[in-house]
Amino acid sequence: MRLLFATIIFLQLAVLGFAATSHKDETFLESTTYIIRSGGHTGTAFSLIHKGYKFLVTNHHVCGDVDSYEVTRNSMHPTLYSRVARIKSDKELDLCIVTQPDTAENFLTLGTSASIYSYVKSMGYPEGSGPFLTEGAIATYDPRKHLAPGRDLSVAILFMRVHPGMSGSALVNANHEVVAVIHARDTVNTRLGYAIDVSTLRTFLEAQP
Image (tube, rainbow, N blue to C red; front, top):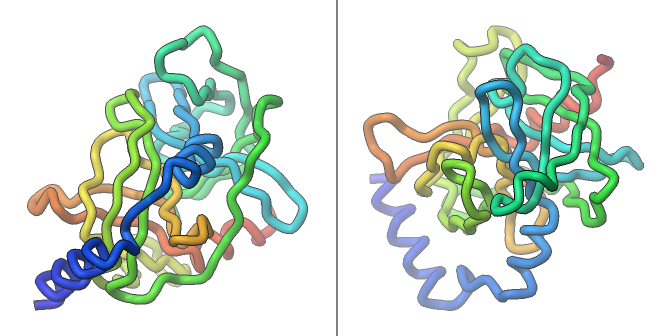
């Protein structure tokens, strides 16, 4: 019933125009979104400024066990990749931050946890192509305590299609504030996705390395 209600709410938002994203909005979001490659892994990262520090955020499973990566915003020109390095990562929380490329100009900021049924969107590089904008809604939240015992790991369940390669994408609200980090898609219901809530991201960023 919750997912059905989330679907209805999302459709109502779309009809009312709240889900409409202007070209200017897409351009800004695209300017903060990168393909990140590490060994055999490819995913998405986004530029973030937090307490005066600037870096790229992605998932730990995208970073893997290596310490340097290639990033670019142009999937059509792989020669434009920049080399960046790991700052810190956390396997249990599935979060990783790396240094920003010299070409980074625009940065997202952290928001607060989005309310259930609220409209959200994400820019990513599914299958290493794009970037593409995906829109959806928050269905509910799951504490996922079994994945990180004793840790603050809150996962948003999304009414949104999450494709391979979108891991590490920023999930943002209408004000382009980060409310979560795309984590995975549901293996049974492909209309559902999962994202690590901003409260968990904030804890990770502010913890001592």
